[in-house]
Length: 401
Image (cartoon, rainbow, N blue to C red; front, side, top):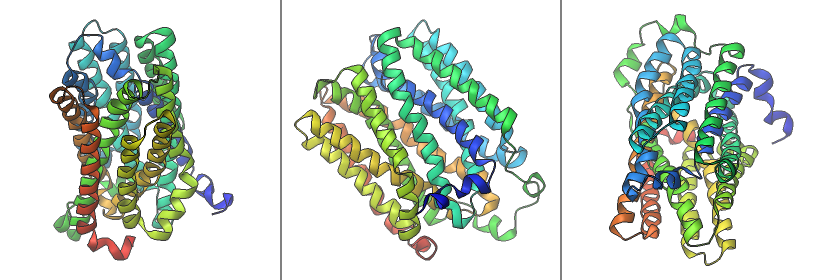
């Protein structure tokens, strides 16, 4: 694929660039806290399961917001939610920076998650609005590139900010980038939803079929497991494994998470043509298995070099997996269901986000801190999700290969 075609969407759709800026800002904020969150929670003297709850409560907030945000964005437009979501995140970040106890930290993390859920659901619906079939994979690659560019900057900045300025400084950075996202939405983003169309009754065929077809349900299950792995491994297991098994300090762990996100970002020119050539269905299946293989590599590694190889593999596999999931999900939905459908898909994903850290924390407590048990649980879940998807998505083979 030539550079001309890669950047065609930015020329053809003026709303794509500000949307990418907003996505990057939100993910910088989310990535900022990744290297230090579990360790910060430990300073309150809580158990492993409670440490996981700091990540989980953020997912609960997203879970609460997803479906209502999808329906609201379909009725009133995407732009109001793209402004309001980051402002809610900003308030939650300021509260987390000023928290004087573990309980209050959980409350503010819940609010951060709620605002993020509002924003991400509306942004995914916006991407669906502006992504015709011939540019869908490439647009989703742009979306994920922006997301991962933000996520690649966030952990590195967050790790060193926590190291030099203390844990709470990270939340002040988070509040600042959330405000920048809200301002960008307010001053430079034109709504992607045709409100006159949104208020029309649904076609009878769409009303009868609904959203939860076998292919859409199958991709929602994959989303659930992928989010489970993302939070349980990236935000919880890998930082502990890096510190305890490979002797890495907090700043280096932040760089490792940054590498994963950077490889995600670098995969954009590769992932779109791969999805176009082999289809979203095949891309989802094989990239899910490749993600599982990267976790196996963590287990068999005996040196820091093996750890870095596994981090690179994880970034490459998920760099295809994330845009393939989004591409398939949009293809499985009628246009009249884009807003609610994105809310439902994100709800499935955030179920994984919510239960992942708690289950891994509980497993760590039960096994006496044996974090490898959590890694193998993730490997098994990814394999099972790929199999379920292969069976459930057979009806979409013609459209997505």
